[in-house]
Length: 320
Image (tube, rainbow, N blue to C red):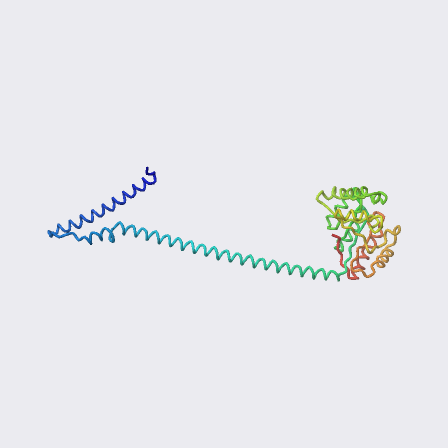
């Protein structure tokens, strides 16, 4: 039994054949009519009839024209597709070239930056830098005066603060921060017997001091600068140093000082001379001073200390 598709195909074939026979019949009738109209009886030219049915068949000519039109459109579309592909390929090559050039430029830039950094590091080795550091504050009376002097000279310093003093003078800590100075942890109590009692006590001191600072400057504030009360060099402190470093703290001692912790209210001149004696031609100075309420002569000596260091070619930076 023929399928639905076969029946449809047979219908189309029948219609096409009917059109062909109709046209052939019309052509034959035209020929016969012409022949009879001339009142001349002659036999029909068989070759001419076949020619009308084959070579010059209007249906065939029309179909061939349609096929040619389709083929031309197909060729045009193929050419258009080829041109589009060529454009895309050219665009792809240009993009690859652009990316390669960008990559080369970025690499050249990185190399230039690397050279500049290396040059800067080499230059810094020859620079004389002084880091002014102040321990045991903040003080309500001395620290503001030190801040005034630093502001006058446009110098940034580093303040290693005690947690309990932060709780007493939070507004002074806030000023230190707002004026762009560095802030470091110097334990909460500064009580040696408590700070170095055992590891738990040591860690508790660091955490309590950090929390005191955060209560003033916000939970987002974090410092990893650390100065041990009394410095970190003693043998019994090695385990505490190791633990602090594991927690990410950067420990800073000092290699110069003004001696303001070596006596009560030492004179301004003694503080200046003590500093000069500890410099010893060092290019990088981390200078220990204090800003507790009792260190009023440190305030008096500070301008002359700064002037002296400047005259010796030192620039000033804060610890980071």
